Amino acid sequence: MKRQNENRTDYDAVIVGAGFSGLYMLHSLRESGYSVKVYEAADGVGGVWYWNRYPGARCDSESIYYNYTFSKDLYKEWSWSSRFASQPEILEYLNFVADKFNLRSNIQFGTHVTSAQFNEHCNSWQITINGEETIQSKFFITGVGCLSTANVPQFEGIDQFKGDCYHTSNWPIEGVDFEGKRVGVIGTGASGIQSIPIIAKEAEHLTVFQRTPQYSVPAGNHPYHGTFNKQVKSSFENLRDTMRHSDSGTGIPPGNRSALEDSPEKREEIFEQAWEKGSLYLFNTYNDLMVNADANETVCRFIRNKIDEIVEDTKVAEMLKPTYYYGTKRPVLDTDYYETYNQDNVSLVDVKANPIKKITTKGIQTTAEEHELDIIVFATGYDAITGTLLKMDITGRNGLSLYDKWAGGSTVRTYLGLAMNSFPNMFTITGPESPSVLTNMPISIEQHVEWIRDFIVYMDEHNIDVAEAEDEAEKNWSQHCREIAEKTLFVHTDSWYNGSNIDGKPRGFPLYLGGVESYRKICADIANNVYEGFSLR
Ligand code: N01
Image (cartoon, rainbow, N blue to C red; front, side, top):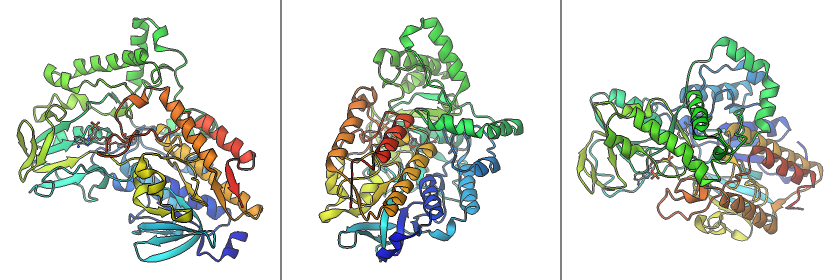
């Protein structure tokens, strides 16, 4: 590259984060000849897979889907050991990628981007790292993921606890010894549900503090054998194209008819087969589970019956039964989750009925009683989707901060989840209002990265210094996202999707629900229409 260097910036592009997004963005831009720097807070690559080392951490997308597809060589060289890869294996994969493409030389680890400001005089970004050094870059690209700012509820007395406290998203590298300990886990989302069965095997006693029961389905994890790996690799192109042109970004076929079209017996048979298959097959049985309350109730009932069958204590089974619409919180996959409540050393506390009042020196005090503990595990999730972007001090044109633009989160608006009005030359990989977490992330990330790269190359070839999303285009996109969401059941449930898991966070639904394929087409059409909706100057 070429023209960008004439601007005498330090780099053509600065990228925040060295997870799936940052690594591929770096590789793509560097291959196209641009100078790139990645800043990463951790001491290694991996993003969420660097930090989430809690016991049982495992991907809930199948390994054959949850990887890069941009390089056939890479796909062929790497073999997954099981259907759902563990955190250590995914971290190993991302290290393998970093080595294979020699990416580390452009990454500065242990470095926080503390602010970024658009400079209108030189049409570039001034990016401050660790609150000290300022770097200038033509483009500012965030690859910070959607789940990277932990939610630690500020319970009264949180600092007084005499035992040890951990959050699943920032787990000690050396691990935690639960042997002979009284452990409390707060939270029953994916992180809680994965860690609870493992902790229960080690701890003297485990108390689970549950606010909302979850629908969880057996993952159906098993080892991959050599022949399976060979077969998958030989059908690489097919698999890649299927994922790229699907709604979900996976190879799991979506349902093609209403749940209400089948007789109860037939439906039961279909649900049972899907339950046995594991993964997200149950979620994909019928095409109206997320839009029709009656259809949704059929699958809810099926899972509640499963809980009755699995959990021996009927009182505990009742407590574990959810009532929200299945799938409107992120569907959870487990290994022996409900079975764990049959162990003598495990108890369940309903903190919706008796909320946590405070943390004491000895443990957790609910409105009903005090639970004495040696270790508290916060599996309390994230300030998702917008949290990390809002935490960075980002300022666009005319001194407008991102925080003010989004009114602290109450009016999140983007164009395609990729760019924003007043924030020229800034791109957000899997940003708010893109399909992101509702899809298989690596596939959505690749689509974003390639689109951003092509846009930058286009600007370069056409002597364009600044690209900025137009206000009208942004308004229309946000409205489009909202309109789709409002036709679904998602908006009726409290979840991290809509921000209701964070005290005081304004509610919205900053996600595009139209699926990977239609989103890909929209983005491609916009590019083909000379980046319609962007002002180019
Ligand atoms: O977080 P969550 P997570 N008092 O927000 C509870 C991805 N992920 O880390 O439902 C008491 O889902 C909260 O209760 P409620 C995946 O996308 C993927 O588990 O808000 N409880 C909930 O039970 C996932 O969806 C993988 O009422 C409180 C729990 O804490 C996303 O990350 C693995 C509370 C938080 O659940 C987030 O999952 C792990 C309070 N004050 C994560 N505050 C895989 O790939 C919160 N809770 C497998």
